[in-house]
Image 1 (cartoon, rainbow, N blue to C red):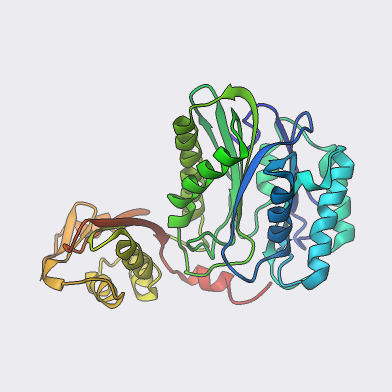
Image 2 (cartoon, rainbow, N blue to C red):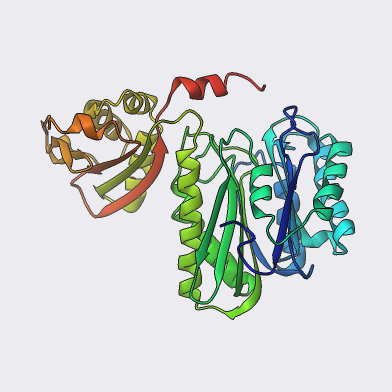
Length: 385
């Protein structure tokens, strides 16, 4: 399963020397016939926007939602790099276009890695040439590996739709916060869809998956999700296409949570009974990002007091006498009264935890996918090297 599981696409992943480790660091994806097809993107909402995001947005606008290729590098985010950064992202598109015989506006570009450093364009240029000459219909796994940064495993998916396929790859292991961050994802499908339909399908898929994922509450500069649809399978039912794209996004989001930097727990936090969906989302997100709560998960401690305290501090409608907190089937706080189910200790040793909080106020609900906070996360993020 990979981004090239979809018929009619080719990909590659190569090493060009951006990463001091010598690991693969440049990937390319293209339509097999080099024709521009329907495309759409969802990008970071961080106003400190990286050059590749700006260039890709502009290219989608210039073409009316068409693309024939995506070029991606890891090890350097090309963010906070001024006018030179924009020139370098543009040059990556122009060289890719020249190698493939397409228009530069039909190339989308992504970068991920350290912020504030200029791209080593001599190495990037060499990598683009190598990637273009290495494209194959089975190159998805190599591409997924080449976009990794602190990831320990590549993230890939393939979903069989109703007569069509959705393939995908992603990277991301930290700084994952709604709405997205420090993540890249590229999806492909052979379903036929207009750029307008594709954009709506992608936005809906991202909203319920990537935008419900938070590791540390930090939003970065480069996050991008792209989709290309070559139409080889013919028209698809819009609902079926939306469901397949959402399933692909869900799989990639969970893979990122499971590989989050240093994480030992993936926590599915659902808040119900809020005054509104918006209040449920705020309560869930604030609690998921609370360092005290995260540390208790790492310690396998169901310390409900920290959860109740954070819920009460979020500013949403709240009444502790109506509050219920449960880990999986085990209730630890029931409408103002604590409980201590003996089976809970074993439950807390699992990798995946279901945490359900009912505020007992209204009908609002929301879900967040998050992780614990560990020593390994701190070790990973103490510096730039």
